[in-house]
Image 1: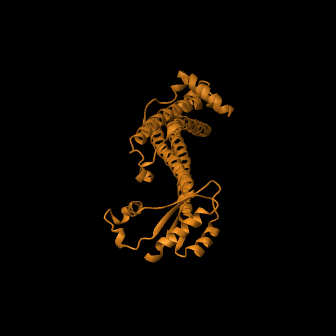
Image 2 (image 1 turned 90 degrees about the vertical axis):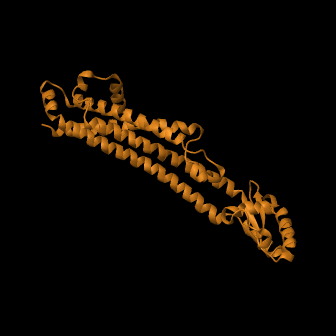
Length: 301
C-alpha cells in the first residue's frame, strides 16, 4: 500500500527527465491505450449485466413470493360450487391477505401471447383461476392443499415455487458471471499492459544501459515506465468507460412486457459505479508495469 501511495504521488508530480527514457509514441502506446479502452468498455457492460440481473432476481423473488394461484378444473355444472368453496377456504386460511377470481378478460390477456387475441374462451374448457396474495407471514401451503382437496377436489394450488426458484437462481448465476467477467477483464488488462511494458523496455535496452552508466538507478528508470503506461491506461480506460456509458444510455428503456431484454442498464446511483473503472485500470496498470519493469531491468545487463 505504501508503494502504491508513493507511486501515485510521483505519478501526479511527474518527472520530465525520467519521461524521456520512455518513447512517447509507438505501437506500445497505441496497444496500451486501446487495450485499456476496450477492456473498460467491456467492463461497463459486464457491470451493467451484473447489476441488472441482481435487480431482476430481487424483483422476481419479492413479487412472485407474495402471490400464488388456485386453479379449479371441474365439470361445468360443478365449477361455480367448487369456486365458492375454494374462495371460502381461502377466506378462512391464516396468512392469506386477499383472493379474487380472475375475469375472462384477464385470462385472455394471460393466454394472448401464446394463442393470439382471438381465442374463444367460451368454447374451450379453460379452468377457473383464483389469484391469492399472502400477507407478510405467509400461509401453510401443504395445509391449504389438504383443505382444498377436501372442500374443492378440483382445486389445485400453485405457489410458483417450482418455477420461481429456478428463475431466481438463473438470475443470480448471471450476476455472478458478470462479476467473474469483470475480474477476467482486469486480469487480461494487466497481462496486456505487462506485455506492452516488456516490449517497450526491450526496445529501449540500449537507452537503459546508457542511463545506468550516468548513474540512474533501476527504480528511477522503472518509475518512468510506470508513469507513462499508467497514464496511458487511465486515458484509455476513461475513454472506454465514457463510450460504454453512452452506449448503455442509448439502449431501449425497460418496458414491462420485455423488461428482461430491455432492462440492461444502470438505475439511479448505479450510474456512479462505472466511474470506478478508470482508477482501477490505473491501479492495475501501475502494478503490472512496475512488476514488469523491475523484472526486465534485472535481466538487462
